[in-house]
Image 1: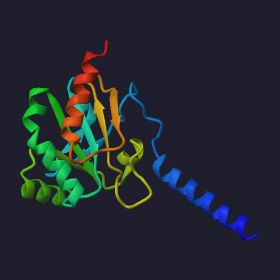
Image 2: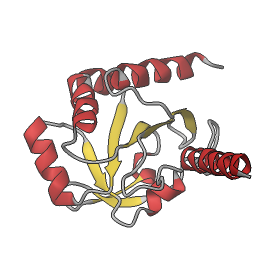
Image 3: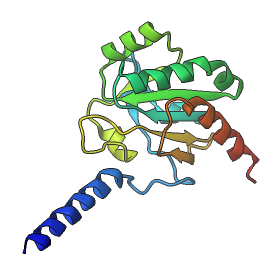
Length: 175
């Protein structure tokens, strides 16, 4: 009897972990990226459709000024010239408010746009809401037509910027 209960607990635990990481909303490369409307660090509203005709990196991150998120943002900052040369727009999204984003940008001299998803609706549409009070770290590479060309589910904050640039380059060579 003890073995049955223990195995039931283990199976339930595994199922819970799988559900935690399976929140993907079925988005795959080739799908249209979900439209959104969010305020930036200054309260200005941005829509994904505002960037039609441009390549866009939409990256979700857990929280401003945390070690991993700072490393990821600073890596994007340090490669910003390469993103500009490749005509790639960078949009970072978290649940932090505009004031927090403004401070984060100023403190780390971030040249790209940070958006506030206070309702978590955009994170839900992109499958990054997770079960915790923070967005899951995930990146979506979107082409000029608004289609997802790649999803980075396992973001390495130390190589993220170079990974994104490489994946965009690879996507361009595919007929």
